[in-house]
Image 1 (cartoon, rainbow, N blue to C red):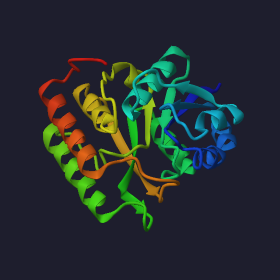
Image 2: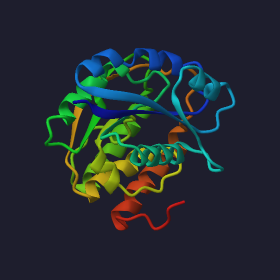
Image 3: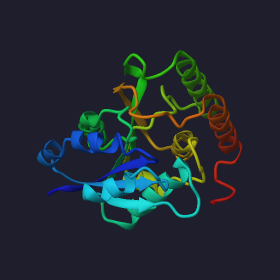
Image 4: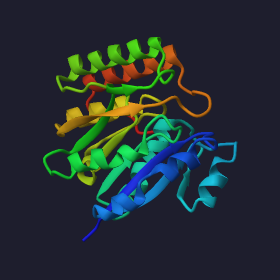
Length: 239
């Protein structure tokens, strides 16, 4: 008996990183462990050939509608997942920063049955030289401390892009993020729904290509999302 698994890769102009990430996903190992994996790409209207590459690789592809932004893409990916029959979803970025070989580690913890969500923590793991600037390292810690203080739920890396979810967890999350604040909002939704969260240390490598994350502006958006969802546990608008 196999368990349906969706591996969600959000992309925006990741033609240089996508194939390497896909080739590193340990599909044979996952199948040997009883998973039935499929790879779903949620693309933010890339212009560099990412969509064409995804099709060449035989991946399921969502091209975002009029609105762009990682938050929109993730939400569309979650909706596609819920429209299918898979029971578990793993998400990680397609820029080479996260190690697909570590997917089974998150799934093994999730499969124990007593956790709803498992995150991969960069700040408890190994950050390779050049993968995260000192400024971003400090910023990630500050935002994580803020999240824990506001929600009284422990997490060591609120901005990580490596998550594993039970289907029931995604069904209960209510999200309206449009950009890079989506991971912080996922944490707030899990905390507000009293979902059980645990984490495993992961490795974090320099990305392939140019970063799209603006340090100060995106950091302020993330902090604002943490504060707003503390005051309003349900999204007021769902764009």
